[in-house]
Each structure stands twice: as C-alpha cells, then as structure tokens.
Image (cartoon, rainbow, N blue to C red; front, top):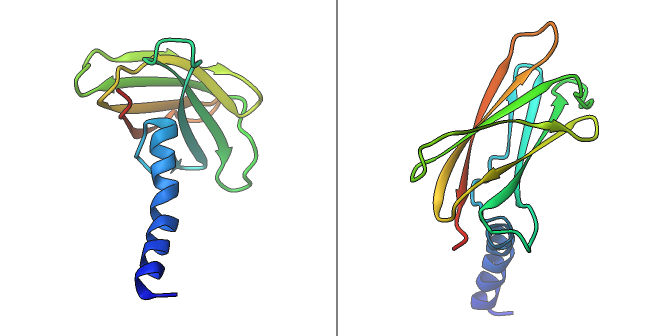
Length: 139
C-alpha cells in the first residue's frame, strides 16, 4: 500500500464519522455532555418527524449520577434555547420519559447557532445549570 493510500484511508476514518454526524443531526458541536457537581447532563437534538417542518426538533436531556452512573428521575428539567439570529428565547419544561430522559419540542430555524441552557432542579439540592452550543446547519 502506498503512502498516499494510507493517508487517504486515515483521513476517511477520521473525517467520515464527523461528516455523518453533521449530516444526520445538523450539529457539529462534539460536546454533548457536561458534569455539574454530581450530575452528568447529556443533550441531543433530533428532528421531530421527517414529515414535519424542518424547524421543529426534539430536545432530549438524559441525567445520570456522576459517581454511580445511576439514572436520575426525580428532577425537574427546564431548557432555554436562544439563537444568534433568533434572539427570542424559548423556554420549555421538559417531560419525563423513562426514568432518566426528559424531552421537549423546540423550533430551530436553519443556519443558526443556538445556546441551550439546561437547568436541573432536584428535591433537597440546589439547582444546577449547564450550557451547550448547537449549530443547525440544515438548509
């Protein structure tokens, strides 16, 4: 195998997963989780349905204990989404789904960068918040 083929193969291995993630999600921000105190907050954004307008996306937040990895289900999760080109914030209280997952629908017009602030309130503990960046690249 020539050196040129080796370099091309390495580029494909490195860049292909990144390109697939952008094509699938419209997002290029690789940081999708943050640890705040004893909570790990994971955020995902995906289109609601292919038949719905492309602007509507499901915001999915998963909470885990940083120490044990156990699901956190006793929280109230609120998300505020604000775009650079769409400065009016959208605030949603996310619905609990299956024990550690919380979801809500937000409108994300294309070709903008959004700041998603996730606030987590648990009984007997101070509320915590984490900020994420989501780049919506789809036309």
